[in-house]
Length: 146
Image (tube, rainbow, N blue to C red; front, side, top):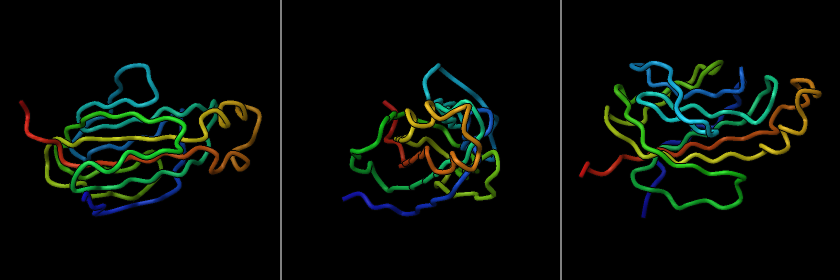
């Protein structure tokens, strides 16, 4: 049975429509046109909101693939290479989370509140938008390459 080894829940400013999980050995990057972008050392979640706001961000570290969750508006999966194994939540959070040793990790990301934040922006103010959008990022070690 997979075990959650670490969990961080925080509130983060979504600035320029993005939340970035950045390996401290990496550079910022974007790929594709979907709400989740995964490049080496970087995971970017693109908000559905048109203005800056605060969102709830949860990051979980697992020892193996966690069960798939229901009840989220959207879910995506990917694989990320982390050169240091430490992730920082940007733009405003001071938390640094140890995912594990340098290497490849599987990622499952979920979001909720996308349709509500899209409908509320850009009219609502930053305080009225607090907590409307939420993100969950789950990481676990990738299996061997084939």
